Length: 248
Image 1 (cartoon, rainbow, N blue to C red):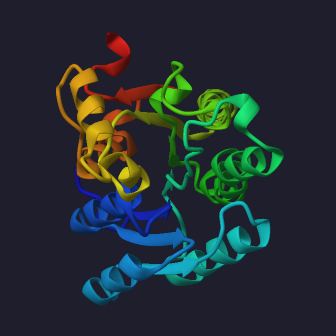
Image 2 (cartoon, helix red, strand yellow):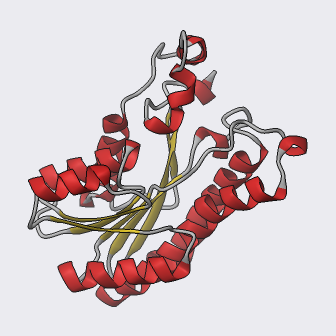
């Protein structure tokens, strides 16, 4: 899968799965634009790939930030062929009675509204060129209970539905929309599970049929396939990458 001359827009690009996606697409020859709240790793990537990579700092739940970021991406690379809506936040597995309005809004605004804002800003560009691939970050929490708390699980179920509907609405116009549903992926987002003696991380690995956590690079590899022309007939699908978790 070669992505020479392709332009990829990645949210949540500074760490974890998003950073792994950035690195893989750059290695495969793409031009990549990163968008995140922080820029420590994106700065390093810019120094390594000064012509292939550009980025801006902002919040996906802020419509102005999103508009400015997409505008800058277009000024830099002139178009966008692939959108990776990877940015997301966890809720600490809070049950609904332990979820106040502030936490609910933070999860929904980032995970759902952020995906909606970025998609609606990039989709018209893809429609104009009559081709585009969008890959949203769902979760096993978008398919079964137990992958997060009330707000996170609700937000990822929303991503699953949004993915299917947007694909159905625009697939005849050259747009493909799919989602990835990760299970236990070892990223900074899950750092709390590895704190102390790491008992929670050990328990998760034991409960996963594959017996381990995955690396973010494994999710990036699946992403590159879904974004490629080899996956042209895959539409509105949510693909688990969970070591067999939901198959139990």
